[in-house]
Length: 338
Image (cartoon, rainbow, N blue to C red; front, top):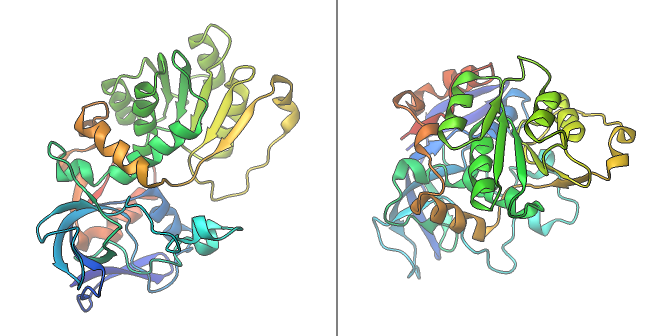
């Protein structure tokens, strides 16, 4: 089978490697689509991925083979690549390790992922794709689940106002999950015009171009001078954290969704007087995936504005696609088509 193997020095190599066989309690999934996550881009850009690893964790496919004792699945079942309920004792490092550190432990438990034709999974790990959800949409279940997790971790209440900083896929999902959770007004700040247009298509009440005026002043103007109740930082930069803490209203909350890969200094005196709350969020849990799929099925989350014909590329173009995504881009989401 083909797999994109990380070789270090910001390079992946598409190689032929043996197709694995499922052992007892395992299933072999034939990957159909694997979306490219910003985390993978940064892992390559900062050369943080271990040499020899196969990345790719936003994927869908079909069950291709069953190991002994597997009773939950049949060959041909459509599945998303994760979101199953983890049995006791099988937790990954994030849940099992009391001092979890993504930079050193993030790839430790799964050296073989889904930038490949096939992937082995434990029987409990996949989640079925419901009728009414396309394979293309299902490939984005994982980033949608992250937005579900972030929204659930927030203090968002019915009638609240929300600002999302960063209009990448997770930011656009946060816009929709915040609305689904009861936000009355949802705004988004994003420098790329195609992403602002997508946000408006997805129901944003207003969008801000941070290259055209002060973001904080515009956010205050949109919220009657008070600031939004909840700010989701889906960019993870110094300037967006500063903007988040400066714009959020008194007793409001800033939710850190994006992973910051560089040191970000903060000056608490600037916002402590407003008793601002900071909430971090990381990844997702099993129920978030099921909620994400349900939101897609019921139309409360729309994936279509995130994708175009140009979004899909073959595995052989993964290096050039990664390189392009390390620079400012007009793309909303790129997906490897296996």
